[in-house]
Length: 146
Image (spheres, rainbow, N blue to C red):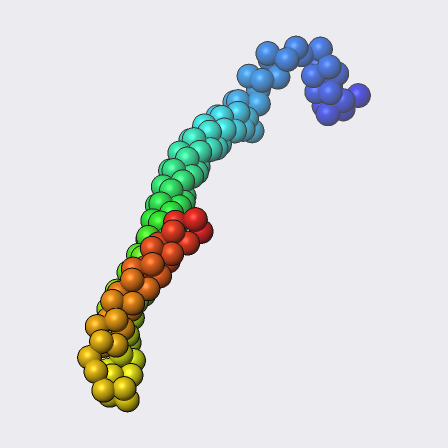
């Protein structure tokens, strides 16, 4: 039997503790570096998790800001639309109330110049005023129902 065979026979009888001791003596034990690697991996995982949470919070904040801006823009556009609608209605009513009496006065003046009197101008202004007010009330009621 050779020395190698004796060594193999001896090692069959060696228990695990003895084997671990021999490996450490020879410097073949990788346990400390494996533990270090596991510790560093755990640190990296923890750091990655923290960074991921921070990124998620930042994304959530940006999303909330954009949602708020979108809602504000929609609200502003709706407000502008309502303002423009009200302005249009107001100007239409003003033109009607002012324009119809003037139109009545012009038509009355034309009739007075043809007939030779001043009655039709006064009647035209009166009729134009009444029609202007009636038309304004009709526009307001129609706008309120819409």
